[in-house]
Amino acid sequence: MITKNKFLLLTLILCLPFSFTYGQYVAPNVSNTEITVQVTYAPTSGVYTYNYTLVSPQRNIGNIEWFSVIIQTPSTTTPDPELALLGDNSLEDNLAPTTTIPVSVTSPSNWLAVISVDGRLRWASEESVYDIPPGNSLSNFKIYSKAPPGARPYIIKPFILTGPNTPYHEGCELEDSNCPSPVALYVHGTTIGPVLPEELKLINGKGQSAAVNAFLAYSNITATRITLPATAKGFDLAVKYGTTTFPATFAATLNGVNVTPSFHPNPGAFDVVRIPLLKGANKLLLSIEGLKPSGAQSRDTDSLTFIVP
Image (cartoon, rainbow, N blue to C red; front, side):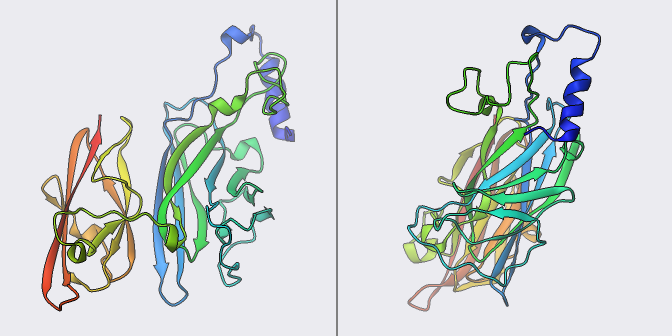
C-alpha cells in the first residue's frame, strides 16, 4: 500500500518535465549497505541485546524502506515467550509461529516492527520521509532474547517506485503478476542474531586436543578462512569462551597489532567483536588458557583469516 507521503512522492516524480520511460528507469540498489551489530549480555536476567546499525553509503541508489532479520528456527517447538524481555511497544503485530525464537524489540523513531507468519522480524519506516537515504545511517534496531548469538539471515528492501511509468505496479510482488518482481531488488545477507543453544553450530580452530580446542569457539563462521565481499570494511565475530578459561590469559592480534582490549572474555559467555578489515588477507590470532578435565592447564591458540578481495 502506498502511504500518503509515498503517493505524493510518486506524483511529484511523474510530473517532472522530462520523459520517464522504462528505458530511463533507474532501479534502486542498496546492496552496498553495511550492517553492524553490538551484542550485550545481562547475566542477572540472561537476556542478550542485539543492536543493529544500517549504514547506507553514498554510492547506494535509493532509500532503505525496511530491514528484516529472520528468527524462525528449525525446531518444532521453542521455549515459551519471556514476558520479562525488554521492549518499547513498537512491535505493531506479532504473527510469529511456534517455530520462532521468542524476542522483544525496540525500533528507531518513526519505525515500527512486525513479526510475520514466516518468522521474519521486520522493521519498516512509517513514511517515506523516514527511510534511510544514501549517505546516512540508522541505529536502534534492537532484539532482546535469551538465545545466544549465531548466524542469522537478513533482508533489506529499498523503496521501489511503482506506477504506470515504471516496470512495476502495486501487484508486482504477487506470484501471479505479469510484471517483473521487485523482490529481485531486495538485498540478502547474514548477520548475527539469536539462535537457540541446541541449534548453534560452533567451530573451533583445531590444532589442539578436543578439550583444549573448546576454550575458544565461534558461532557465526563455518571455517577459519573466510572470504568476504569486496566492499567489506569489517566483520562481527561471535566468540564463545570455554567454561574453564582464565580471562586474564586472553590475547589477540590483528595483522600483528594488539587488539586484546576489543574482546571481553568471560568463562562460558559469548562475545561479539567488530573486526576492522583491510583489502587482502587479514589474520586474527587469538589465544587463551584454561583447565582440561584432568586439571592440567593448557593454551588454545586459533588463527582466523578474513579475505577482502
